[in-house]
Amino acid sequence: MGESAIPYARDAAFEQLLRQAALYASRQKCSAEGAGQRHVTRNPRDEEIERRAYQIYVGRGGSDGHDLDDWLQAERQVAEELKTKR
Image 1 (cartoon, rainbow, N blue to C red):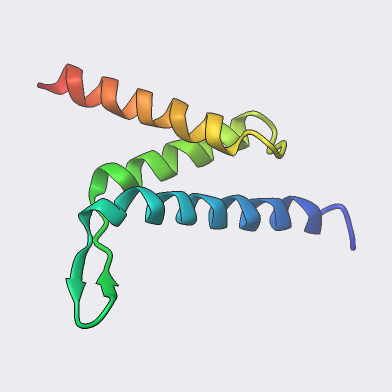
Image 2 (image 1 turned 30 degrees about the vertical axis):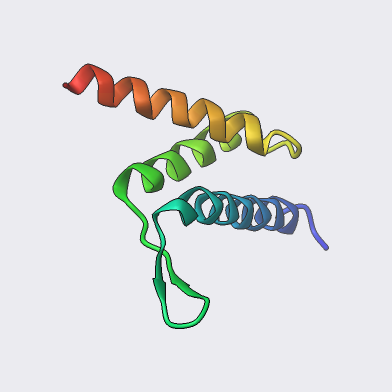
């Protein structure tokens, strides 16, 4: 495995963690469909948080182990931006 493959693997793993975190966060907004099935809807705010968390991750050099911190920082930044737009 070459040097160029390592960052890609980390990016893919981080994106998967972000998708899982977004899914977990949006489960409160799910509506039941049938017996035990759920339909997950994503809103633009969640997508912006996901993008921002990834930018923080990349800006930090892509080091592993800070996914929750990146996500929470991104939530704070997006919330602050929404607050100032009102």
